[in-house]
Structure formats: structure tokens, C-alpha cells
Image (cartoon, rainbow, N blue to C red; front, side, top):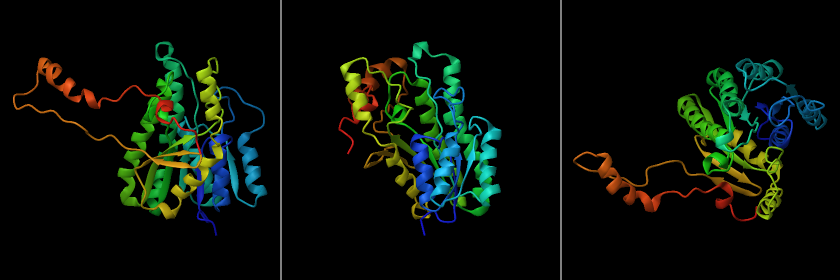
Length: 304
């Protein structure tokens, strides 16, 4: 008996990369899986050959598992409802939602248009809301359920040219925490995971300079399938007391990320003016200001 035996799980963006690994690992653990994938390009446009979702479904069935394909878009409310309904119609229940679907439209901020911004938020943030909200009534009624939302160090720490992506990924952190707070009384859990993995999502990174080439070579060591065991464990009943957290998985390393809390305070009994703020507060706080780090500045060691 696997730890997900008798459960049904929706995994979005499950046709390739991290999502595919999660869907296969869920099936190995005994879960029936709704494999959702649009099968489109990285920017969300056009079909790319045979359905990746159907291919993963066939892999799961070949190993003796249960799975169905979904080609709905997470960016549409109706799509989110349809893929949750696919779990109910085919497996009679839904116990987990893994919000993994994503897209990229990387541009420096001064070149980013509103369409580039909206397209990324529609898939990552609104998409995570759509599927999560569609599953919420079922979770509430049965008194159990688990959400796993994919965030990113692009938002948690920072990266060049990803204002849209970083905004969406930080929004997901807030969404996950809010779900955890609102649905705790129903036995429902919600956590965020930042996956480190070499997938087509980061395959577009330029390699024009020696520094960029070195970075890409390091990223290629990040195995997309290494994310799956942690996600399965997090979704299982064995993690029933784990909720509202932010994790990271980087090959064989697992991280628990901090969450924003006050670290310094300034007070005056006279009330602040703009002048006294500039005279006293900034200098008092300056030693604890965070530098403009990017993800690579923090994770400087090779993945193990």
C-alpha cells in the first residue's frame, strides 16, 4: 500500500518536467491522477505535437496505475472546474491539487508590456486560484485535502527580467498562506514549494558570456524528478500537520524558507515627520537592509 493509495490528485502542467515527475510519483504511491497539460509552447501559444498529457497517462497505465488526461487551461475558471470535475467523474473524489502549470515571458521591466505581465499572472497566480477554488467545496465537505503550489526563488529572492513571473510566484505564496488559514478548520492544508530543476522553463536562459555559461552548466545538474518525492510526501496524510509553509527542493536538498516578520523597529513619542524619518529611521535600519541579491547569489554551491 502506497501512502497515496485510494486518493485522487490533480497535477497541472504535468506533461513534462517537474509536473510529469510528480504525476508519475503520485501514481507509484497509489494515487489516481488527473494529468493536466495544454501541450503548448513555453509562452503559451500553439500546440507542440502529440499530447504530453496523454503520453504521461499511458506511462501511468502501463505501470498499472489510474490516470486521465485533461487539456483544459488553468487560466480559465471553467478549465479549473473541468479538471477538478474530471477527478470526481473518473475517480469519485479529489484529495490533492498540485498547481505546477506555468509559462514565461521574460523581459527587462522597462521593456515588458501589459500583455506580457497579464499572460504570466493568468497562468501562475489566477490559474492556482482557479483550480484551488474549484476543489475547495469537495475538500470542505470531506474534511480533508492538500494543496501544493509551486513558487520560485525568482520571487522569494529575485532574478533579472522576471517582474511578471516573480510577481506571480510571490502572489502564490500569499494565496497559499490565505488558503491555509481559511481552510484549516476543515482539515485542509496548503503549502508552497520552490523547485530547483532544469526544465524548458529555464532552458531559454542566454549563454552569451562565460558567467552565463557557468550558471547554465550548474542548472543542468538539477534533476526535475527530484521534486516529486517531497511533493508526494507533502500531499499525503503523513504530513497532516504541515500547512502554511514555504519549502524548496534542490536535487537532494530540502529547504524551509523564512517568512516576512519585523526585524527592526523605530519609535518616537512625538510622531514622525518626513524630515525626522530621513534623519533617524533610514540610518538606523540601513545595516539590516537586504542587498539586491538574485537567486544565484544566495545558492552559490553546486547541487548535491
